[in-house]
Image (cartoon, rainbow, N blue to C red; front, side):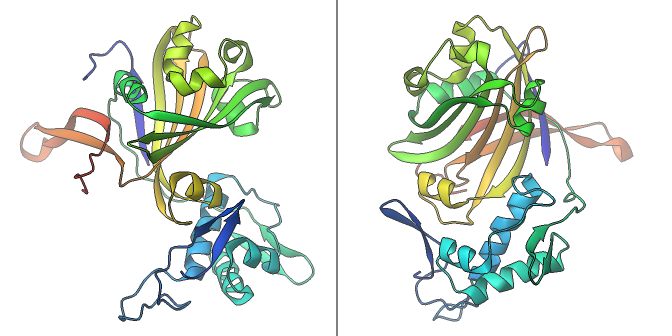
Length: 306
């Protein structure tokens, strides 16, 4: 886990195996044609087995808080239908979750999420650039998938410093470059600020710019960079496989008074988008260490596969 702090006053640098039905389309699980349920292809190469992909998706939902202690998971038959796999495959995935202490399973009670220790994380810090994020927004195409006003869910309320249930604007967008989607963005904005712009504005201008046009004096942002897995909705929107790895950025933007004015969760395709850091060697002898000299988010060109 990478904790980042951005200050606007700092100097800126510029299967065949199963599928999930989504309307008239389907999203494929990540097993290549010719692979069996244990994940071995016809050539003998090992691939991620289906039960493990489902296990990873459910594990990520539990660790991220999307599934909370006490929640009951859908039954084996329902999950099998959702993921387009056999009940045996789902059962193995749920047994893996139980073995990890993330769920409890009991006949007649189903599969329930239980309290567990958070996953270990390694943290560091660096400086990012809000201007980089703004210019990237101006150079990409946007589709608004959902726009509404709603009571703030607990995670958004905590990030925005408001009470759960206070009205907030929620928007889900997908950004694309050269007609290829690369990010899935979910934003929450306090309602009194959000009423100054609508979904059409969000297709034409970055949210950061709309906030400033609304009179918000953006000062800083704090964010956490982690990894996550694509669920069915995100996989469809980003044209990926369910369970594919994603870069996850959770960011809270604050104004000059210290008020949180935006909470965003951004999911990025790692083949299209990356976070890069440059380090300088400082000190000498036993005290020598690496210090960040420059950081920034960047879209990868079509020829950049690193």
